[in-house]
Length: 118
Image (cartoon, rainbow, N blue to C red):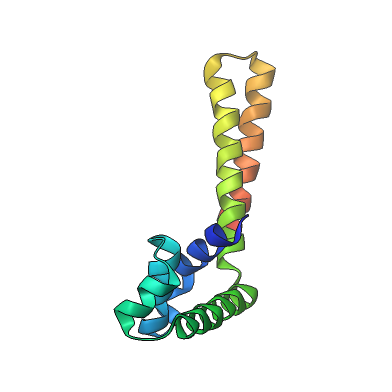
């Protein structure tokens, strides 16, 4: 995953744990694609000040993920649900009865994994 997408996702999960100013600066930079210079003008700080704030904010977000793992869990659940949908579409497309039972068993097993992790 590229860094911009990673940080935007981490910001969605942990952004409210940052200081309001760090959150705003990271949000402007990663979610609104505003340059460091433009952010600096808006907050009346140097480009270097913006860079330092972004760097500290990124480090904090990564520490939160390391400790809490919410994004990792979300990604795992998202992938599992996508796999289940794929299998259900096969079922919908018409399979033999044995294939239907295998697909249903797979979906039940995968959903139970997700439920147990929640």
